[in-house]
Image (cartoon, rainbow, N blue to C red; front, side, top):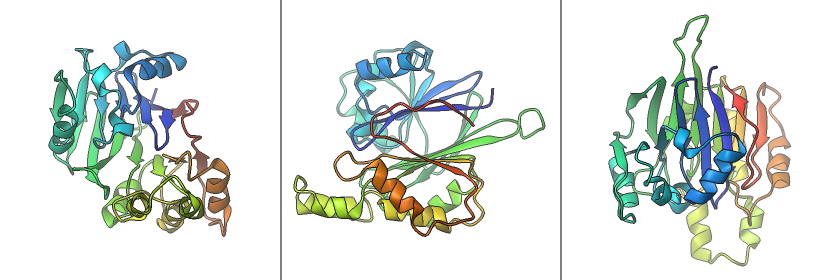
Amino acid sequence: MAMRFTILGSSSSGNCSLLATNQTKILIDAGYSGRQLRKLLESVGESIEGIDAVFLTHEHIDHTAGIRGLSHFEHLEFYANRDTARAVQSKLKKRPTWKLFNTGTTFQFRDLEITSFSIPHDAYDPVGFVFKHGNGDLFTPYRSLAWVTDLGYVSELVRERIRQVDVLVLEANHDNDMLNQDTKRPWAVKQRIIGRHGHLSNTAAKELLDNIEEPWWKQVYLAHLSKDCNSIEKVSETMTKGRNQKRDYKITVVPPGETLPPFEV
């Protein structure tokens, strides 16, 4: 088996995915309660006891809500940079097994190579990840996945890191018109969302996909949709406007809160 990737759930309310190889099983973020995470894992035939580690992108609750419950599992390791770990730990009574990395570094966890990179978001030290598996030979060719949600704009560093991966998970948080018309969110919150350290709109996500030169992607997931200010239909409509005919990858829009079938990377 190469890598098997399963989005357990993704929206502005909660985010968590499972990445598995023959030797390793990890969670990318843990934005649901411990009880919810157990149910989500069981729904795909897995268990918390079978997970080896949790990798955190940043400290916001829709990415870390489950850490309190997961911290009671002594075997679990929690990978984060120092600022993220400090922010999460400040809200916990129990101290989980933290494994700290420096943002921008590449390190090994079992049979996975992980590269972290800085992303622009209003958190202490938010990161995206590239996960790489394989030996680069005929029998075990390299396979890779980039996880990039929660970013206000696409920096050159982000463009560089995500171009040469097989699978890309990218934020498409809101539809600009729906956000402007939303009566629940104060003006200041809307400004935060559309700001340079907020969230990518559908339009911004499409511009990224259309303007990356010669991407290696086979599968793109558009995730982290707002339940109030976006919809599957709005994302799909945006992606098909003036569509770049050079696309030779599949786009899947992730319904908020739904678990998707596993994808073999």
